[in-house]
Each structure stands twice: as structure tokens, then as C-alpha cells.
Image (tube, rainbow, N blue to C red; front, side, top):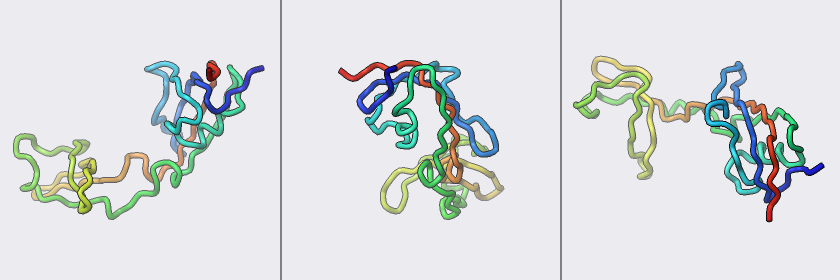
Length: 145
């Protein structure tokens, strides 16, 4: 039987869950995804897990938070005066903001709480601090040319 190896295009289905079982990603809506093993487009642990699999095989792979989106960092939770926010749209929990960090990079913030004079915004990735549990199914292997 043919097994997946670096350089192969593989077609996979997956479901990603957090430790508490919450589904945070899957191919259910979009259908199977194609990726090239060794291209570095996914977590290395997933590529390692797919290598050696055969079509139709299923496997569970865990990516620890340190290898995924890192631990939650409380210093990325900030209070922002409402006077510094755009006036045309009232802030609401779940709203995203873009801000420039001290080093000049753009970061995304998620408003988590709205007070009378300030909002609380979180710059952590939504999956920071989470181990990710992947259920993988290798649908097809397209060997490299």
C-alpha cells in the first residue's frame, strides 16, 4: 500500500477539539482539504502524524499549546478608554479592533467587556492556552511528481 511521505499532496478530513471537547475547526462545511506534506503550512505534529498513513486511515494527534498558539498572556489583556475608539460604531463584546503595538506591528484585539468609560480587549489568539486535539482521516494520497 502507498503511504504518505514528504512531497506528497494529501487530501484529509479533520476535526479539531480543545481539551474540554469543544470543536474549534473541521472540514465538515468546506469538505476535504489538500495539503503538501513538508510545505510547512500546518503544525509540524500534523505533518508528522500524516506521514506514513495510508488512504482511509484515521489517526489522533495532539498539538500542545506551546506548539500551537502559545500560553495565554495576561499582559495582552488591556483597558482602552472609549474616547480612543471610533465614534461611528459603539463597542460591543466580540468586536475586533486593530491596534499598533509598541514595536510597530499590527495586532488584533477582541473586545471582551464594555464599560461606561473603557473597554477591555484581549490580544491573545482565541486558542492561546489550549492543547489542540486533531482527529485526522487521510482520504487520498497524490504522490509527488
